[in-house]
Length: 151
Image 1 (cartoon, rainbow, N blue to C red):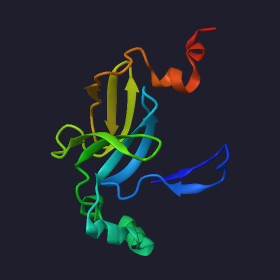
Image 2: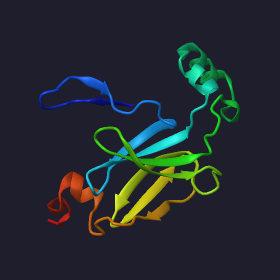
Image 3: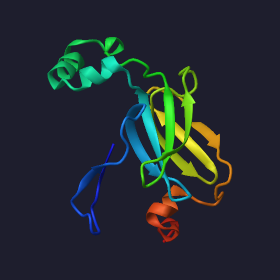
Image 4: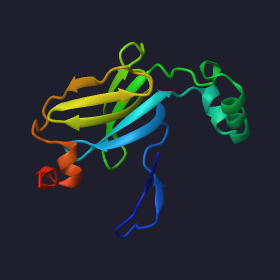
């Protein structure tokens, strides 16, 4: 996973933030403590990594092979990873069975809970987080509390 600097002394530079992730990264969101949440869709395998390096192969697979036969093993493994600005993994939550939360693509911390969503889930998951600010909301952190006030 890469970090691209949009401001400051490193503006315009791109660098590796986290290397060798255990799965395929999807969405990133802020955490109440200043770190970040990352949803991982599926688990990496050597076969999948090899196929990912071949754009022509991937394109043919997507266009010619039924979705349930794609070379994408372990999509049923849901995972959310918490990491800091140095790219260090701090915590992770897994659903290796795929029963509760497979193909996780999104997460959002809100008032002491981590909410989970995915492409093939017919539900929203919720994990109670310990030691966090129960009043913190992602919305307020991104846009400010004043933006929610009715005019």
